[in-house]
Image (cartoon, rainbow, N blue to C red; front, side, top):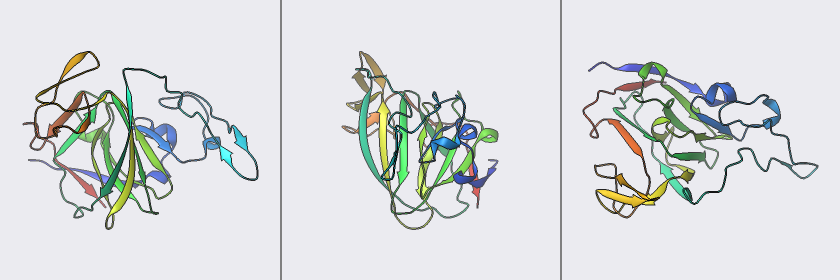
Length: 212
């Protein structure tokens, strides 16, 4: 099995427009960004800017819907051995996921833009944090984030088609969703319309090595 090597990059060196292929950088001064592009639908201006606070209230104007749900999750990320191959990835086609490392720490994220089959040539790896987080676009392929050093707490809100898994098929939002396989946990709130690629989830070959 061939191994595709991906160089680790610092998110702070990446522009918001460039990262929009994967999602949105959260935490960067919005005044540094101009133009409209994916997940940057408006030229955001501070709603309040005084000696107490600079505030942006509505960076992404999500529309309220009874077809989507918001949840607040918490991760405690563990580190991986440098250079250890990553042999699977996943995407959530109807859900946005947010990741904010806490405690002044950082996380590593392996990402591929939304597409039918993840392309190693378009896959990139980023160090996220300590003063920025990310929102992954619907359909962005990703290996679960992991810590650089020690346990890293990470806030993980989600917004989209979420529902607790109730069996091999889960009924939600007026339709049946296939929820069978090792990636699904009974009774746990899952992002529906999730696809897995490689590893124990499918016979597809996927083998990425992050170069530190």
